[in-house]
Image (cartoon, rainbow, N blue to C red):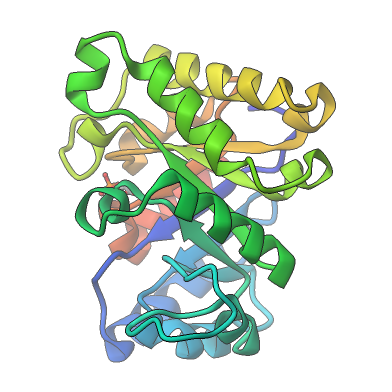
Length: 252
Ligand code: PGA
């Protein structure tokens, strides 16, 4: 791992009621109390955000949302704005997760607007990118990543690039137990960093790139040792406080 500070984020997806989230955070806090060498983030569903912000206050754990709308307000039933997140002291937001792209029809353009709105509001975004299994088999991985990274970052100035974390999440590795080979993860992360360097070589060295897709305490050591991987976006294993803390332990 490089001089960039590692970031371990747990994406809970549509899991945990407020009561379950409380039980999780009470278990997690003492486990990560001493891990001061990595940033630790949990991404609960909207309904548990405020409770998690309160419970994590003064600790090492930051709280991110899993999505937001780009507009400041308006007739967008079911959506949440950046100001609604910052009002309750949420620190950041996951944007463009493949499940939102595939299941909710989120486009690169929408993700780009969200990313700019998040930064303007003072939220730290995690931009998710990644190819499907078919795209990888057809040699389309780089084309897909180029499109998602360049479009996703298209509405922000180069000076803001280091405020963004990019999560490389091959879709075939998400929730499947089929983790990317270290070489695949490193190649993709290096390619993403080179794309960012096309905007600014200096800022590309500061921007953090995470790997996501079936990360566990067991495979985290190999993944986090890769030169261009600066952390992990963890789904399934982040639902268990002990497993998540073990991954944080590897990073720190
Ligand atoms: P997973 O999910 O760790 O369960 O594969 C990762 C993600 O979707 O961010």
